[in-house]
Length: 438
Image: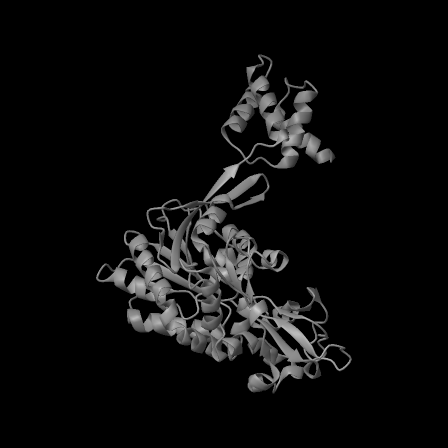
C-alpha cells in the first residue's frame, strides 16, 4: 500500500479565487471572492469519509438502479475472466460492489485473482479491506492490494500496480486487467481531463467498466428539480463542505450551516444554455450539471470585501445524455509521441436503464507515421534494393521495415547516412559514429 497523495497540499491548491491559487498556507489562506473546491477526492479527508457514507445512504433508493446495473454488468463481463484477473477499482470507496461481484463469481472455482481498490481516503480503504476479508474468509487465492492515493498519482506507481509487466519471463501466465470507475465517479470531473489520465494507466487491450447516472425521459424542468432535490440534502452539503473544516477561519461555521450558508438553487443547476460555466464542467453535450453554488456572509472570509455575501462553488455531479456520452467515448482520443490512445465500446456488455448506464470500454492504440518516418521508410526501401549495400545494411533495413519505435535521433542519423550516399559502409557502425560526434 502506498500513499503518495498529500491531501492537505492538494486541498489548498484547489481552493482558489477566480481560478487562481492565492496562498497554500493553512493558517493564512487568502480567500476574498468566489471560492472553488474542485476535486471530489478532497471531500473524503478525515470526517469526509463518514459524511460520504451518510450522504450515500440518504440517496440509496435513487441510486439503486445504477448499483444493480453495475453489479449485473460486472458479473456478466467477468464471468469467464476470473483466472489471473487483476481488478483495479478507481475511487473504490468501501468497494462493496466489486467485492460482491467477485464473491458471486468465485463460488467454488478457487481461481487466483487480485483486487486493487484505490481511494484517497484511508478510512474507506480500511472498510474495503475489512469487507473483502470478511467476504472471502481467508481464501489464499483471493488477494487484495489496497492503494491510498488519487487517480492522478497512480501513473507514478505502475510498477506496484503491474509488477508482472517488469518481468520478462514469458512462462508467466498473462494477467487480465480490468479497471472500474463506478458510482458515477465520472460525473465529478471534467471528462476529458479524467480519461486522459486513466487511459495512460491502461495497457492495450485492458478494459474499463464505468457506471453513471443518465437523464431519464421526462420534461427537462422536472429533471432539473429532481436533481436539485436529490442532491441538496443537508448530509450531502456537509460532505461537500468538509474541506473547509481544515481552514481555521471556517471552523465553527460548518456546524451552523443553516445560519451562515445559503444555497443558490437557480445557479446550482447548469445546462448548455449557460455556455461558459457549462463548458467548464463537462465535455458531454445535452447533459445537466449539479454544481452547488453557496453564498456565505463576508464576515467569514475577509472584512474588506464590499459585497454582503460571497459565492462558493463546490463539487459537481453531471447527469448525462446516454447518446451524447457514447459519442464522447467514440470520439475521445489522447495523443502522445505519434501514438493515439482510444477507447472501443464493447456493445455486448454495455447496458443502460432509464436512469443509469454501465459502459464497457477497451483501450486500443493507433500509430500515425510522421513525416520523418515516411522519409526514413523511403530510404530503407531504396537501401535494401541497392546492390552495393553490405549485408549489415540489408539486415538493418529489413529489420526497420518489420518494426517500429526507433529512437527519433537514430532515425535522423539514418537519414543523414543514406542522404550522404554512404550506402556501401557498415550502416550501424556509421550511425554510432555520428551519434558520438553529437
